[in-house]
Every structure is written in structure tokens, then in C-alpha cells.
Length: 221
Length: 221
DNA sequence: TACTTATTGTGAAATATTTCACAGCGTTAC
DNA sequence: GTAACGCTGTGAAATATTTCACAATAAGTA
Ligand SMILES: NC(=O)c1ccc[n+]([C@@H]2O[C@H](COP(=O)([O-])OP(=O)(O)OC[C@H]3O[C@@H](n4cnc5c(N)ncnc54)[C@H](O)[C@@H]3O)[C@@H](O)[C@H]2O)c1
Ligand SMILES: NC(=O)c1ccc[n+]([C@@H]2O[C@H](COP(=O)([O-])OP(=O)(O)OC[C@H]3O[C@@H](n4cnc5c(N)ncnc54)[C@H](O)[C@@H]3O)[C@@H](O)[C@H]2O)c1
Image 1 (tube, chains in turn orange, brown, red, cyan):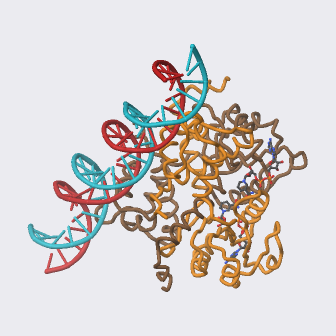
Image 2: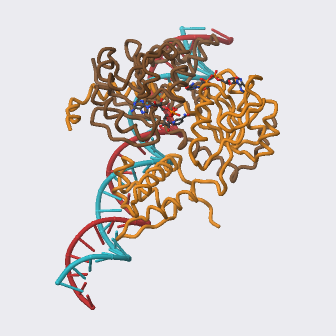
Image 3: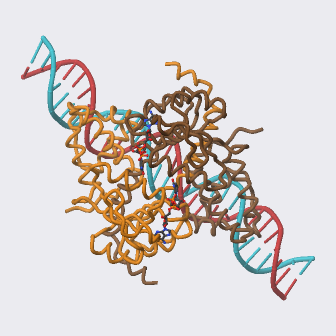
């Protein structure tokens, strides 16, 4: 039993990416892989891959590299909850429905066990197999199901209240799709997934790319 | 006419956030703001805000801070295209439809001018005011509309082909929602918006939070 | 067996990012 | 008028992250 070496947010993001890439590789029948190969897939450097994997505790062999299967296992032990983790969704609108279909579809580590919506017409339905409750039952259902992580897809004006209620109900991790920053207490991790800001970033760098690179001919192939 | 001081990806992300926060502020009637106030909203430091704003070229006054309105203008001149920018969407499924409703709804800088889907039953429809074309018309429509940025929401297996076609059609910025890494030529900027990886990150840090902090009582309020 | 080769794990260097700290400057108060 | 205040812009220090470089090592070869 030893304390985690404090893994940086950036490293966790890359470890999750490695696992995804390794999963593809495994399904293609690949048994082992070298750091420089994984680096090429992840668009990073071999040294970075090795450095990141130090945090995981899994060791490869100089001759064979890393066992794809074992490395996925080691990453999963680090990244995943021991049991399949239940997730809540608040806001079953256009985005919420897409999320339900996405997370229902795949045999994922995560299952959306409860959804909440203020629209009485939606309460009581089951969307993609997930029951929809009224927001008044938030605390009760979250406690009963043992849910610790939630996704927020309510209108921007409702997000602050929703996030506060989730924190009160004992949630410790929140993925917020509403384009507003909200306060959370110590001990709660919140991440913002803001699609328009992503699009702004893409548009910005698209323009600077265009300005600085003439070699679009690389496409010729 | 002077060359941009090469703004880092992280800085651009924060500048976009500042603009969003300033927009909220402006609509609340706020006229000016100090770096430490903006920092508090953005969960950063005052020094970081000032450093970031150096890249924008806008200067505040020691007495009044920054004019909210003028700063939004300066950020927009840096971040935005001179004209409202047209965006393409490929894949009008569950996620694609949500995106169309989202970007149609707001008087955004970005307008989704064309959508593409392989399903013949969807071709010819207008979803949220956006026409849906067949994938065979990708190059033609993108050229005609002068589109430079695209969002990809097709199934994972189709993403590589779709991205390649977009690059060939002259797109220089791509926001990819499909959970696969794909190759793009020099001169094209691609960003991955991977929701399951975001959720994994949230679940991971939710657990480490829980382990390290007892002061959930901060919620008491 | 001994030699060759290619890779890993990691200390140390290099680089990128963030924070510190303070000179300089409008504004306000007297 | 001028002193005091609290801010901005920025060089320099501190910190975080990435890359370099190499000893250690396992496998293949003869
Ligand atoms: N649609 C997208 O693709 C998209 C993209 C990026 C961001 N977003 C953001 O995600 C959020 C949801 O977007 P949407 O398009 O699904 O909106 P939507 O209006 O279609 O859905 C919002 C849902 O939230 C429910 N709701 C409202 N208040 C609630 C409350 N207090 N508790 C529980 N449920 C409540 C409504 O009944 C509705 O079903 C918005 O903040 C939006 O800005 C959406
Ligand atoms: N639904 C979500 O909330 C969600 C969340 C995260 C990621 N994603 C990813 O986004 C992508 C789309 O998800 P979805 O739920 O909308 O799937 P979906 O199956 O509902 O929609 C996919 C759409 O793409 C179209 N399509 C297929 N091949 C095409 C091609 N070659 N050219 C143009 N159109 C094509 C299909 O006709 C369909 O309309 C997937 O890669 C998925 O993994 C979805």
C-alpha cells in the first residue's frame, strides 16, 4: 500500500489515450508494442511514453517492449474503478439523449444508471434503457445507486443550481457540458467540456496553419 | 503588419475562456474588470491573466483595469475570423443533430452551413435550417461555401476516410468527435473531443479527491 | 559461450509555463 | 499640488513538463 506518485492531469489524459490505442491494437491481434510505436500513434515522443508509463508501475521488456494485453490491464487498474462505475446524467435534452445512446451502446466501463430532467413529460420514461427521474429525487437516487460521477447537460442558466445539488448529494466528479463556469466545494473535481470553445480553438489554429504552411501538397499522397 | 508572437495552445484556450466570462459580465452590466477578478472567475492567477493578455495586445489602465467591452473586442479580433465563419458537419446522427441544434440556436460567430450524411434518407433534409448533402458532394459544397473548418461526428470506422476527404477538399481545421486518432497532412489542425476519455479523467480525479480530502464539509455553506 | 543489437528505465538537461516582484502610472484624497 | 494607493506590464525566478542520453538488460546469432 503506497501513496500514488501524484500523476499530473496531462499524464492521466495521455494514459487514457494509450489505453484506447492499445485496445484498437489488441483487437487487430497485436501482442506487444515498443514505446516508439505507441508514441507514433499518440503523436508524442518515445521518451514521453516511457516516462508516462513509469507512473503506472508496469514494466516492459527491452526485447519485447510492452505486452499490449498486460499494459491495458495495468492502465485499467490505475484508471478504472474496481467495479463498473455508475454515472448520473442531468438534463435529457438534445445533448443528453445523444450521450445516453452513446454510453448505452458500448460495453463500457461506465453505465449511466440514472438520468434526471425537469420536464414532467420526460420523467418516468426510460431512454436507451436509462430511467429518467425528476430533479427532486436527485439525492435519493444517487445515494441508493451509489453514484459518484455525474454529467451535466442542462441549459446554462440551470447549471449552477444543478452542480450545487449534485455536490450536496455526494457526487465527487462532474463533467459539465453547459458553457458556464460554476463553483464547486473542495473535494469535488469538475471538468468543463465546452464545444464552442473547442471549435474556436480549431478555427484559430486552422487560420494560423494556413498562414504558415504552404506544403498542403503533402496531401498529394 | 507584424507576425504573431506565437501564442501557445494553452493560452488560446484561456483567452477563449476569458472572452466567454467577459461576455457574461457585460450582459450583467459590468463595465470594467481587474486582472485578479478575471483570474478568480477563470480559476487562475492574476499574473497569468495579465501574461495571457500581453499576447492580445490590449492594454488596461492601472486605475480602471480592463474595459470589458474593449477587451472582448480585442480578444475577438485575435480569435475570430473577420467574417462569420462557416463550418461543415459530417455525420447527422444522434450527436450531429444535437450539434446542429446547439450551433443553430445561438447567434454564434460560427454557422453550420452544410451537413453531410451517408444515409440516403437524410440527404436533402434541412435539420435546424442546415441542408444535408450526400458525402459525394463534400468537395463541391465546401469549395462553393468557402468552408475551412469541419466537425466530424461519424462512426469511428468511418472517421479516417471522412477526415482524409475533408483534407483533400481543402479544410484546414477539424474537430473530431469520433474516438479514434487519424492522420492529417501538414497544414491541417485537428483536435479530438473524446467524451469517454473526459469521463475517465473525471472518474479518476473524483477518486483521488475523495481519498485526499475530508473537508467536504465546505459544502455546508 | 561471447558478441551484437535494440530496447527499457531513469538521472539530468532542456524547454515551456507559471508565478513573483517591482517599477511606473492614473486616480483619488487631502 | 502632491502624497498615497492599487493597479498594470514585464524581467527574472520558480516550477512543471518534456527530451536527451546512457547504463542495464534480454534476445538473437554464431
Ligand atoms: N446540443 C449540443 O450539442 C450541445 C453542445 C454543447 C453544449 N451544449 C450545452 O448542453 C446543455 C444542454 O443542451 P441541449 O441542446 O441538450 O439543450 P436542451 O434544451 O435540448 O435540453 C436541456 C434539458 O434540460 C432539462 N432541464 C432544464 N432544467 C433542468 C433542471 N433544473 N434539472 C434537470 N433538467 C433540467 C430540460 O427539460 C431539457 O430536457 C446546454 O447548456 C448547452 O449549452 C449542448
Ligand atoms: N452520441 C454521443 O453523444 C457521442 C458522444 C461521444 C462520441 N460520439 C461519437 O460521435 C460519432 C457519432 O455518434 P452518434 O451517436 O451520432 O452516431 P450515430 O450512429 O447516431 O450517427 C452517425 C451518423 O453518421 C452517418 N454516417 C456514417 N458513415 C458516414 C460517412 N461515411 N459519411 C457521412 N456520414 C456518415 C450515419 O448515417 C449516421 O447518421 C461516433 O464516432 C461516436 O463514437 C458520440
